[in-house]
Image (cartoon, rainbow, N blue to C red; front, top):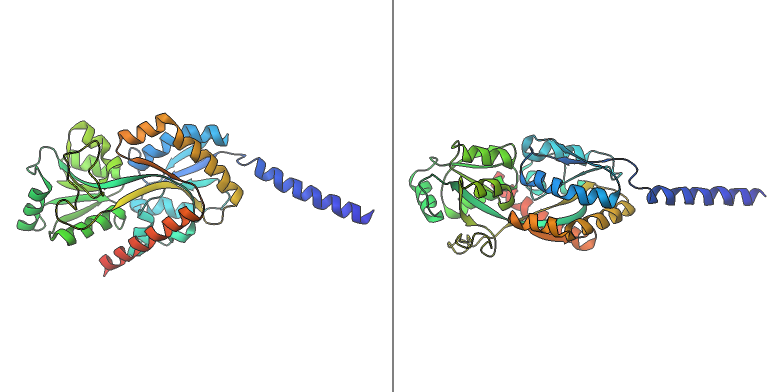
Length: 315
């Protein structure tokens, strides 16, 4: 009877553990957006929100927590309980800030729940500015070092690293000005407070569509479908191509069952035709990669590349 009782207790415990997973999630999930409202990351979160809520069966609370070019929000997530109830939308910035030494977290402090999209970096200027081409802008920055105000999102972030790398490769000097979030950088450019900016195409969408910003050069491998007249950096004679990514991540250590729930939810969300059209309309490419070895390897390679580049720039 004693053995039977012990077996019953053990079985009950296993059943309880199984039910705990089956019930995930049992409460709202907070999605921390480390930038102000209106930027590309915020837009992506709100585009994903309806489909994720439908699949997961819980409310997704989108919480904007700007500060430090994303560091404040990413730090909060990295330090949260790895229970699947606190997530974020990261990109190359988590690797860049690690390489620059600006953050206490590391890229390994996150569990990657899925890659959602990839997008090109792009240089744009005020539409009423004097530069009609990338070559004209570069010539001006070479002739007048420090004259052009060149903005980006977040000190030590990915667009900062790419902006500094571009200046080094092209041989010009500009006044580099960080902004707290891509939305603020776009507003600064449209308002005439800066002359040019380096951002992802998705982040630039509002400024380009309004006609207040003019795209000059893309850092992608191929010309952009919606901006076929904009040359790539390689076409301009510089051997550099870089893309950004956005996905969903949680604190390191979440259970495999949680990863599986998110894999299902993100898979369904990224297959939604309306979501795909929205991403395409903003210049992004839906590039869903489920959590697992392939995604971890991709993140590892990106981390190595960006961390190394950022460390060189810091020297």
